[in-house]
Length: 432
Image (tube, rainbow, N blue to C red; front, side, top):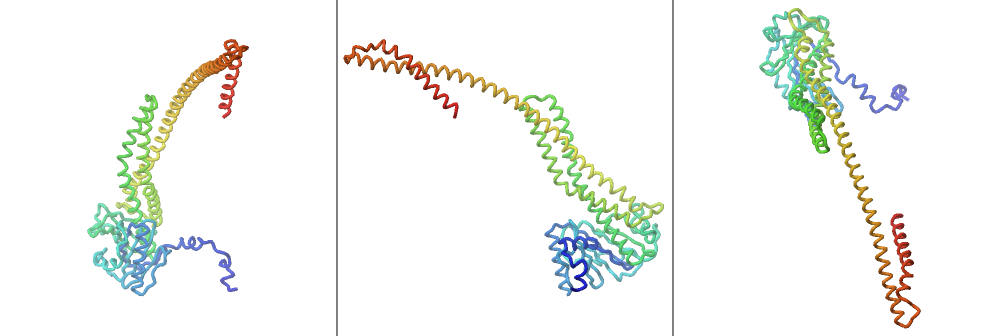
């Protein structure tokens, strides 16, 4: 047995073990030499578009004599001439991060991103573009006031990061080329720390943009939720005065219609609002990870995003809470109405059953009367037949037979026989 077979590999492996262990290393931080320029893009995709983008990446690698990513890879790095592509697949989006080396100079964001787009267009666009960030890291220090000409002094968020070893600045707004620009002044960070900080600030920009996708959904749902909130008190007030099955059923139909409309919106927004909460938590986590130190007279990244981002997040969470609260109220009101309708229907059914019972009693008495008349009629018929028989016998010479007397004597027996026969028939029907 080999030495490898004597270790943990000697045991039967759980099918998910490798995947679970690899999750912690799915998106490793890589060193970043200063100066550095990164054009970062995030595209919204579904599973089919993500697979197509992976296939396009594999094809580009093969054309350049490189090995492409396998089907389970979530981050892949390609070293090209003058640039490096970092490809990452996430749950609902894919990122392409292009790192450009050899761009010497002291002017932030020079050259313009249009001069770098030739490399970027090596891969086809996998889906709608949501995030476009232009990160520029230069060595040395910068005065925050000197960055006002780049970002605009009234919108710039600037602070120290990584225990004061870097200065980070942005305005979180797209420039004339459509990029949100992020500047990092590397005071004393080694390549690994520089790569970690660049990765964190790009994640902040990506996740804060994705978190805001819930806001248009909340704004779209707001009129419908408000209308339901106004309709519900009117229906509840109408419940206190409504009487009768039809009136209560009409109110129940209206409540059910409102509940259905609410559930359609809640179901459609369930994923988006849940994603908003998750992305907001990721933004909070990344802001803590960059170890930010505010500077006098300038808003920090955390302060800027708290003031601008949190109202939108609270709007989404408030919309979700209103949906849940309305759903509970509509369910309770509908249950009350159903109980009232069921009670009234049961009362009507009770009245109907009593009426049916009375009709059955009447039918029974009528049946008994008819049975009595039937016995009399049948007795009369049989007695008439017997009387004719006796008369015939008397006329035939049997003078010992008196038709009138003999018929009178026979009538009690006929009545008994007919009555017994009717009783047998009724008993048989009752048994069945």
